[in-house]
Amino acid sequence: MIALRKTSAGFGIALTEAPPAPAPRPGEVTLAVEAVGICGSDVHAYEWTDGYAFMVPYLPVTMGHEIAAKIVRVGPDASLAEGTRVTLLGGITCGRCAACRADNPAGCTDRRMLGWTRDGGFAKHLTVPARVCLPLPQNIPPAIGALAEPLGVSCEAVLTGGVGLGDTVLVLGPGTIGQGMALIARAAGAARVLVAGHGDVPRFQVLKGMGFTDLIDVADAPLSDQVFKATSGAKVDVVLEATGHPASITESLKVLRRRGGVVVGGIHSMPLNLSLTDFVRQGHQLRASYGATRSTWNKVLSLLASNPESFRPMISHELTLDRGLQGFELARQRAASKVILMP
Image 1 (cartoon, rainbow, N blue to C red):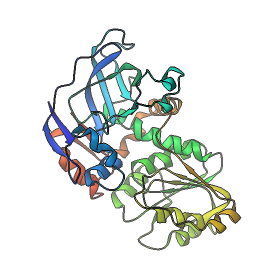
Image 2: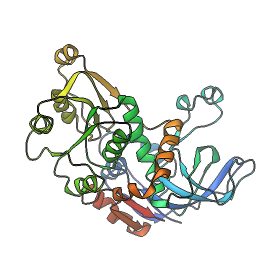
Image 3: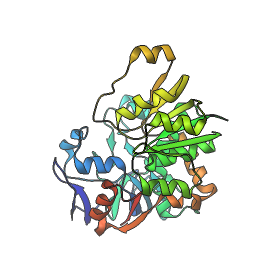
Image 4: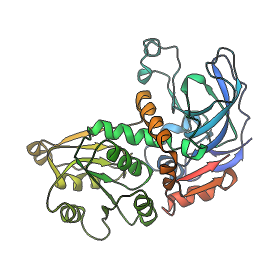
């Protein structure tokens, strides 16, 4: 079976032969992968930036965790039927430890992550526990179904930030996660959503196509200058970060209202330089958001099903798996917004 695999600690990913997906054991299903997205974190692992050494004990591993698939084989006692179209929770729990027995999957002591510490979806077939499969509404096409995972991450950040009716929201980073944050903040009732990036022309075009006009390119002028120009000097209520650059968080505090909150959703290879005295005096809140709960996934699937094609502009490229290396380079060079591979 051909797959895109991380084979060693260092730059790159390999299109190579991989073992076939094993037959499903009790409680498992085998999937035919229909669509899988290249995530920003996949690109970081491809580049081998700081923060991905945790993968080393599991190499070689087939990457890919933004998955839409169809069940083609069902193991004994699996809860889903053959032919069901699904998307996948990224974390696979052991089901045996004390946390799992207490219905606390986040506390699992042997949790594996699809595409990172367990083979993922950059391949034709994949075998997983049925419990991590979420049925996709029938009106959601595979490529759009593959957006469910990043939209879950975006939605969790919006919920963590408590975005509400009438808020002004600043999104840092116009990539897929930032686009999702903007869409879901708007759906949550935000009166205004500003999105900042740095020379991100293709991604700004995506946002324009989805009706966002307050787009800020910090290559042109400082963030605070452009935000205050757009808001006539008013500060924003919530900042949602998806850049991976700590300096953007520091800059955003200048435009955040007193007692406003910053939600950090990016993965950072450098520490944050924070003036704690100013932070305390302003009563600012710094929160983290990572992944998504099952209830958040359910919200996202309902949102996708309500109008699937409204999310189509997020996808800039659909490529076959054998063009996966090209897809990674398009994403790495920011010449693409979202690349979807079709195994």
